[in-house]
Length: 220
Image 1 (tube, helix red, strand yellow):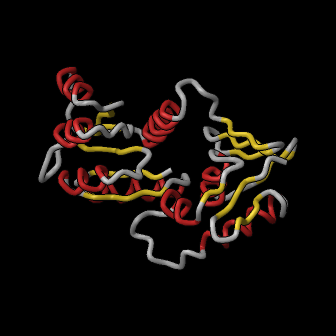
Image 2: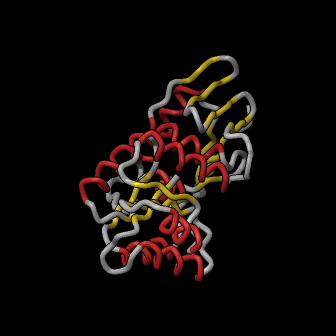
């Protein structure tokens, strides 16, 4: 899943990005409201973490502008303020949730995952299945039949991209976009490295290469 953090407190933004990356998310960070609006408006994000007090354009206006333009990306607003008026204003502009600083990192991650599950289908189960393979996206655990398979955060993120579209071909570009951030300028063949590792752990037949198109998670 790809997240955008719009936060002008650089130390906090870097800390959040580092933690969320370790959780398996691809994270982009900007420190200005106008830049945040520009990036979020281009689409491609699964969720936006949006501070209210921002240079250029405040979070309320960024949120309102995104909703006015028809973007339905989940928005979690952050603010150092508190009080019912601020929360009401944030929600009235189209925010999906609201968190007051200082906040618990564990609570932030829980809110993010809840919003992503809600967007993926209301009260739908957070467990993805493909044949005997089960991914619990809430607990970040993978089972092949009765056996648990230990994956790193990045391996899980790659597998999750395949699992949400099990049986369909997922391109290398799609995986790069959602698992690595937009600033990644390394070798795009890194995807092949992770696919190879997943095959070793899940079985060679679990992921099929569709030449010139991408990869498909097989239901076995």
